[in-house]
Length: 459
Ligand code: NAD
Image 1 (cartoon, rainbow, N blue to C red):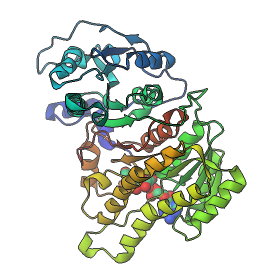
Image 2: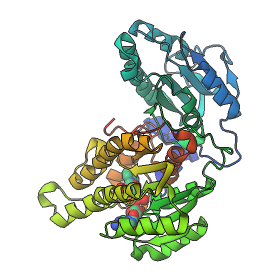
Image 3: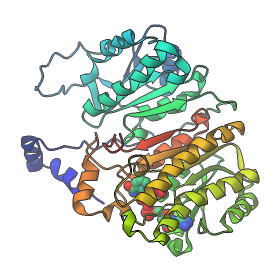
């Protein structure tokens, strides 16, 4: 699962060869370590006139211990096209409140703010644009706000050295719900989340900011399916690090690995096949009897049975749809009906970019993963009524056993065909799930965020 090309590209000889041939040279991404500062330097903050988020942005940066600048540190770079990029980057992040842009003519304000400073974004830096959801903006403002997507997606493709961009549409009235999202996007936790559009909406339940942002899930119970290895094991690690008691679930055949994970995170192991007819009832019983309910439910268990459609056996179709979609719906319904998902609860699905872009040999898998997106959209209003949320991640190429088994050429293509020129790590998916799970994310409902380094597939 090591990325040998990345190691080679950073060696003495490799660096020279890569530069001469113009090959991708992936920057090692900065990943979160407890105790480290939220951002490696100051953030430059700007706003289009008439914006409504300036106070919120400044308050969030202050609370996260990030220095906010309103003027650039240095004069604009004047280097000509083709010269080496600036090495003395001065801004760890650029944050722009574009909510004030009420007509397309004013999109020029994006250019005016970003052009002089875009090359000053540091290694693994962040660009965040804040807007109003076009559907809440109306008229010409809706057109201008929709245009922000094209801007941010292009910026993502231009940024270098592991830097990423995000667009956050904040519904009017939801300003108080934006902190967890801003903190996530600015931090190293979002290392592989690039060029995504996130919606922060209005909410009936109060946003409960965690007392301790380093342990936002203290006192919560989280169920993670498929937790014995790969991405699921990493989700268990991260949710436990954030303070949750993790119930780690997997099939009996994975019993030993499952126990090892449960012990490591000081949680509990539950051997269960999620497709078993009695699985929903057994989960209701287990979570009620042992924990009095559950706060976070992560549907991570998933399988592939790849074959082109004309050669696919019906068992392969049925098994994938059963594990990746049908079992999740049955479990959701049982937990909701028995009121086992507590108030402020979180359901989190694991989709895939295959569910967005489609993939040869994966009609069954892509159908199931697109179904997960449908699940999020359909349940979101139902959960909102209960003060709960449902969201999904859609991972791209993640370095796991699953992707290590992919033939070399395809594996290399998968790794490099994204703006960061590398595969993600299981922890990148886990951190995104932990952001959804955070009590401060009550206004983040119905989102599907890709963890794919801005993959070219389905973009
Ligand atoms: P993995 O095969 O390493 O882990 C999946 C886990 O699910 C295994 O431990 C397996 O035993 C468990 N599982 C399978 N069927 C089950 C069942 N019926 N009941 C209970 N547990 C069951 O895979 P991974 O790469 O860690 O993937 C985790 C999730 O992420 C999956 O949903 C996968 O589709 C999705 N995903 C992965 C990638 C990637 O690049 N690895 C990309 C996109 C999406």
